[in-house]
Image (tube, one colour):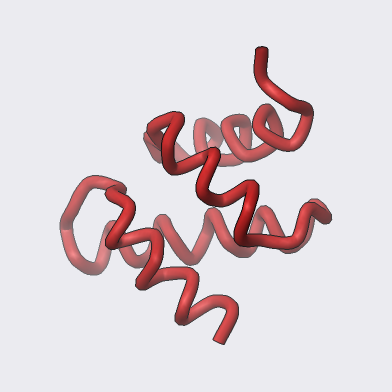
Length: 71
């Protein structure tokens, strides 16, 4: 069963046609603040990174995007 925050992450990703595997969602749950704006900004940053690199979302790509997002 998905936790409420997982559902929010999945919904925001789906809204912009971004596919996030379950392992990526679980990783995000432990690395980003759980408020809506932070989740939205993290998803946007991951999407931009994926688009810029022309790659699917993978754990290394997400880690790199979060370094840019979280500093």
